[in-house]
Structure formats: C-alpha cells, structure tokens
Image (cartoon, rainbow, N blue to C red; front, side, top):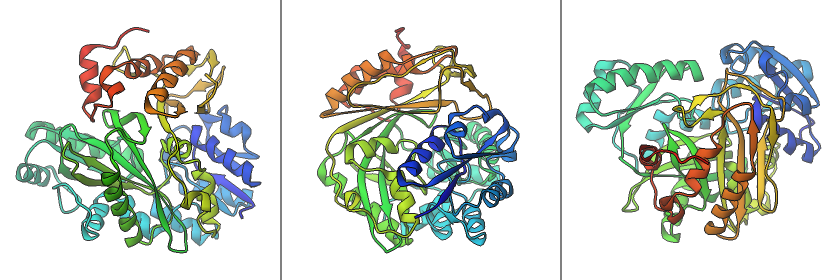
Length: 452
C-alpha cells in the first residue's frame, strides 16, 4: 500500500480522495492554486503546497509544478481525480518516469480510450455500436462542413480530450457548424490544453446511459451497473440516478457485456466509465469512455455498497479486485443532484462569492460530498459545482421523496445556487414517472422554473 499520495486536483473530489486515503492509513498532500488557499481540501490534507496562480494552465494543468510538489513531499502515488490532468497520458508517463505511481489506467489505455476520437475507432473494432461521424480529428471548418453535410444535420462537435460538457457544440446548419467548430476548439484548448475536435451524428433526445467499470492489473474487469445521466443542460449533467428507469435486465446485460469486452480489449485497469446514447427502441451507441473516476460515482457506491476511490488506490497498489466489488449487487436506488453556485433564474449565471450560511441536510440515506462551508469564498476561476447531494432509498419513489426533502433542508446564503431548480426537477411529473431524455431540461425551462 502507498505511504503518501498527492492529490492533483481541487474541490470536492480532492476532499473525497483525502477521506479514502485516511481510511486506508495513507498520508495525503494537497496542491492548490492561490485562490484555493481556503478550500477545505487544503485544510484537511496532511500537507499542502501552492503550485501557482488562479489560471488552470498555470497551476492544476502545470505538470512540472505538480511533479515538483510530489518530489518535495516525497510521495509514492498521485491521484488525479477527474478533470484537469486525469486523462492526460503524458502526465501518467511523467509520473512513471519519476517513479511515482499514477492512480489510474495505463498511459496506453488513456490514449486509446481517453481520446474520444481514438476511442470510437477502438469501440468499432471491438464490435461495439458507434454513431456515424468523422473518421478522425477534424482540422478545418471546410472539412467539418463536408463531414456534416455527408452524415446530415444535426451533428455534435466534440473535443477529443476532457469531459464535463466542455468543448461540445450542437450544429443544426452550416452557420452554426462554423461557429460551433471554432468555439468548441477554443473552449477545449482552454480547459484541456488540447483543441482537437471530431464530429458525430447528433441523436435527438436520446437517453444518456453510462456503465461503471473497475479492473485490476491482473486481467479482471467487472461492471457495477449503469447510471442514467440524461438530465443535463448544455451537456452538463445536473441529476443522475442509479439504476436507470429506462433499463431492463436484458438491455443491462447487453450493455454491461459490451462495456467489459471493450475495456478488456485495451487491457484496461482501475476505474473507468463507458458512456452510451440509447434510443427509444433500446439500440445503444458508444459515445465515449472516461478513463477516470466520475463526478457521479457516489450513486453507484450507494447502490452497490462499495468504495470506488479506495478500490482505485488498492488496484494501483497492485491488489486484486476486492470480493465486495466483484460480487457487488444492486440493493437500493440512489439519486445525485449537483449543487452549483449559479442563478437558475438568470440564465444560470455563475455566482461566485463568499458563502454566508451553510447548513447541509442530514438524516437516513443522505450523503453530502462538498468542500463548501460558511465563510468559504467561492473563486470565479473554476467549475461552479460546490456540492453533490446524494440520497439512497429502497425504491425510486422513496429516493425522489427523500431528495425533495433534503433539498428543502439545504440552506446556502450569500450566493445563488441551483437548489430551487433541483427541487423543480424532483416535483416534475415526467421525471417522477421516469419518462425523460436528454431534451428534458430544455422542455422544462421552456415552461419556466417554479419559485420555491
């Protein structure tokens, strides 16, 4: 087992990793940018090292500074969390060259699956269905127009790196394609340091289903069911649930088997998630693989009774998959709401600033993953998510009731949050019936958000 791990991330995921390390008896080192000095992960880690100013490309994306911090602190492992350098194969290689274990998949697996364009080709070769699209990276707007006209609008322009909805644009005609092509490239360059994009056919109002995988370095790969991530706005997930109300056992087996087969084809180990688009006929299409832990991993943990972050660390240390993961069975229903510092009544404008009052809900089946607290200054430089509210219950109906109750208890003042919007979703009749797709939020917003 590791003696000391550096967390190359910030916010709630950094805190989540620190907690897992403490339970495993592993010391932790936090790195932080200047505006993150007061973040909770900095305060709770055993050591903390500043790595630069606010911009990500001068701090959290700066490989040399992170490695320098790791060497100063004498760590034997680095956990990248999600985002930033989590799916950067070069970073994983640099870690290895410095005799520091990268807590994630191999650099080769990241290249094959973390790069979304290469992943499509890998999935196709493994016999997993993919949607029509470009054969590779699209370099120019002229090439983009040619491809889009060939496969037919609407199309999706997607960054090959990263995730979280960044570097993605939908185009319905030539004009929006040209605009989207350049804006997606610029956003991807800023967020991931990689401007490359590809194009695929946009499936209108599909279901967004992802399968959680875990593999060890001894050749074993298992899946821990699916999560439904269809409730999203501008490709940013807002609510996730496990299991999906769309799924039946037959479809779950088909998609689960395809996911494991694809992961094994690239020698995958550690945590990973394969994302699919599913149409109303039950046909599914490979979308991408996230070669890292996901933001929404807690709902799988709650339903399957396992700790995915601990298992990541154990697998990286060379251990076999734990029996509690290999033999995990779904036992409950869980829902996660992402609480963002945004104003839902003002086009979801970011709302940075100092939190005045912070009171988190509690009670049976309620979990909060958050780095926020009263007096915490939310910086304007990063993602606006400040908390994840997760509830677990014996049925979907009970989980919705519990989430509605917990949202009503959640009190955050000093900044605007998406809590009222989440309450509106929980009370929406279509959501309560489990009848929704990726077009749900757009339809809901057109009707207006009720005041709570």
